[in-house]
View 1 (tube, rainbow, N blue to C red):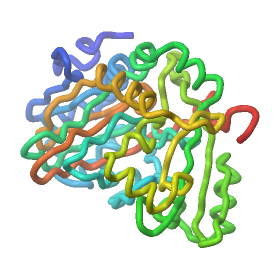
View 2 (cartoon, rainbow, N blue to C red):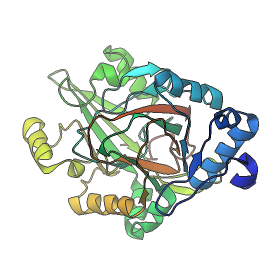
View 3 (cartoon, rainbow, N blue to C red):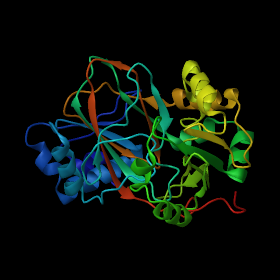
View 4 (tube, helix red, strand yellow):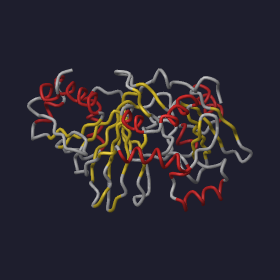
Length: 334
């Protein structure tokens, strides 16, 4: 593989300890980035580092992000089974997931519970926050190596379960998640995507899907800790939020929760252990308006710091990827 310096020279790639590599553009450089040579340089950078921050594109709105996807030649990814409502601005271009600004959003891989997760994520800062709000990244292979071998072995053997209960109060509604409220269409989608479902007496839908926790990257075969086990677990919620939801909906009616693949519940200490491994491998750079962070979604998890002041970071999803060893429920069913 050619070096970044030779591939996208004379732009160069800056690397600072504790931060993702940065491509700092000067006026006019953005034209070079979209040439075949420049695009290949970015592809090589992502393959080597898993994430690249591009500073100097002067992105101002959703149309700019859509243009980036087009110039990269990346197929937009349609969001399905979303866990929170987003605004859709263009094919593959969305608002950030709504999340309280005073609470951090812990590490996860976007839509890792679907069969065709996006391989590429773009985060474009239109308005930088006054304090905090950085999007952190963590290498999934390094996180995997940092986790206890016994825990990894269990998740590799059993997979992980995601259970969801759709209502009109918390999280995405049925229509927002599936694009329809028609029961037959929802059931057809679930059947085609290895999702078990149950219509409850009150008309709400509960789904369960079993997925692999460790996958091999489609390029190079590197083993990656690829899931949302900690992010979508009840123990990651703020204590007062968790207590309210359990009291309101019951432990089996939470909007979302995760378990071991056998259905055994996760303990708080295991969830904290996973989040601690992520924290130990998190790198981030404060946002500046116009920044673009490109992330290999299979190789790299991402998070969001708590923040103060207005913050507008748009999200691009592209390159839907069918992972050969994560494309269906773990053998044996639910």
